[in-house]
Image 1: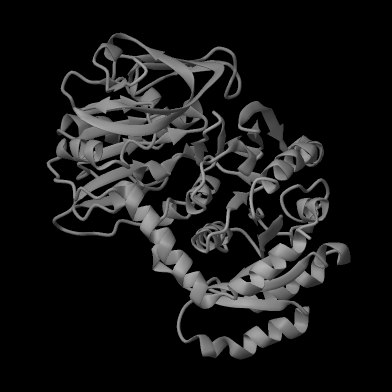
Image 2: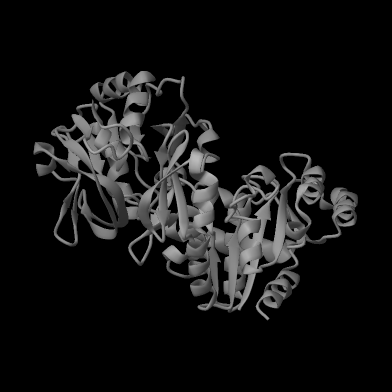
Length: 486
């Protein structure tokens, strides 16, 4: 079976989107293609059909390939929960933590797990499209690597290196990567492509030829800046830098950027609403007083993020906004913060402790070792919806008697305040479907466009695939991938 790996000259050069686009392009050609990322580091995750979790980017790539997301597509997931510690997810399940002190040795020991998933996946399809992490030029991290060249050499898969011209210095970044790599690692790279080009592509002809000459790698294309990317689920950190778009007739939805913010792509469907203006509020900035709704998103370290929220004075902003008639929506960790108290007696997130919440819902949460990971469907605010749960902790209290949702398996979820303006839920993805999104937006006097966000994303993937067909040598990439399987 064939395989091809995209690595980058750095983070955020577009590897995730390019792999998604190529998955859809190859699927549209009738090939059975599956995505794979050996190791991901992200607090944006998705629940898989086999009851585990993988990085959100790999779930999008699975959608692009028209396949169900599976834990084999991302066998190692690191979810940062402190500056030097990450929760370790292996084959979709929590396996402890990995700290900076044992990072190199810990990763090395995970290579057999990665290869186990790789072999299973490779046996199931025509081509596996693989995404690297960060950059192979980070030679200080080469020892014990399982994300880039460590995997490529162990699995013997060819690599195409991606450079980002939008950030500048793309010639130096591609040629420089070639210069610093170990010769055996460099030999795995069979070509390059340049991403995010704006303007007349002929202006880069000489630069493109220079890269080919100085690296001896074949160029596989020059990809323009693609507006379709803005309609795809948010990637880590990038969307958090977006400022308020402005629009005098729009209603403002504000979301504070917490240090361990997780699954903030829950807000993406709101960005497609013509009468909604979503603003991500950075530290040091007050939550806008004119916000019609404040969304508290998921968190990988709820107690630490609750403490940070209070340090920023955001608790004062939220409570004042609610007194003025604003709506507050808490999702997962954000739901826990809306309660009276969050306790961590077993030290799940760090030293055992508890903290007062915002007190907007009459509930309390106790964190525990068991992690709920399930796809769900049900009804909330009179509307049907589908989504997923991904959380640690049990929430209880009188507030749960007025539940936010009734899950199809018979469980109740979340809570709604007596005034109806504070909504808390463990359900991720609840804004994707048009019915529940419309019901929630009606709380702030906005009529939803009624768009099906899933259809918006699927259309964007097709447009992305069409663009890559025009600008990349897909035939050449296929030949390279198929040669690896012989």
